[in-house]
Length: 135
Image (tube, rainbow, N blue to C red; front, side, top):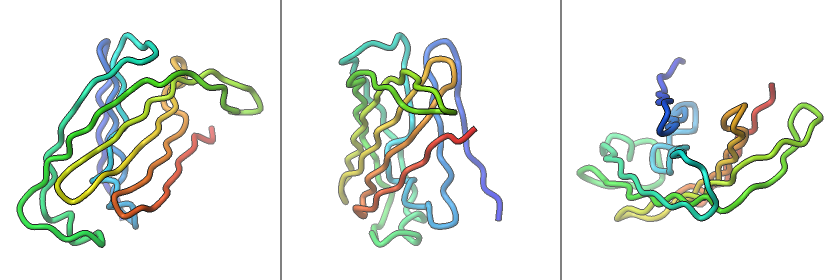
């Protein structure tokens, strides 16, 4: 099975739409990885995403009509992560998504040379999903 994702990368921001198939459909309801330049600790920005109700077929949550996920992003600091046997400095971006059926969370780790290194999700269904860049 194949799927489409999206990426926006320019001088102002990087926005990434994660995979949403093969059991990962719940990520449609989670905050999407997103950074806005310039990067600095305690920076806050917001986004909103309309979610079609056909996604309710893939989750334990059931809703009619569309949802609007209101997301708040905060750069909470920096952290060293291990990558390819080296420690690299990453910005930590904490995001909270809220809509009428619940909340979801994403912590992203972003390195200015390599991009997104790790995603830690807590989904609206209270599942933990972690992606880590391998190579």
